[in-house]
Length: 164
Image 1: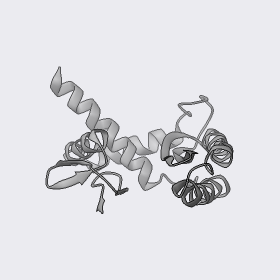
Image 2: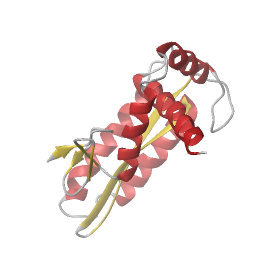
Image 3: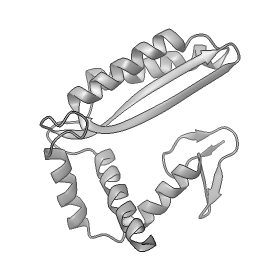
């Protein structure tokens, strides 16, 4: 089993190869390329932008921050088919919790119906959602995930400018 060079997820089958690494999919590969571009941006510029995002308005509800990265975990199953995913969103704590609660309820209803992965992954994703709902990122300072998201945003803007 390989580990994705971008998001760190385990890759059971397939994947995309590039730059001497293996990635979940094309999106993770492009994300890794954007990170490489972002390494050329001054750390001061990155930190300034990270704090602006952290202290700014929530992109979901336009309420006051702090804003950070929140992850929701889902599973759905049907007999021998099971699908699970982790979705991140940059938002305020209230919007992050709302998404995690929605994913928790969805997983509790739709996750158990597959064998064997539904029975294995449903409790894992339920616990992950509960940890996110009850804990979450430190509101006093931006998380490493927020810094990564800001880096990717700056890099994608730079790559778009180069393409134009």
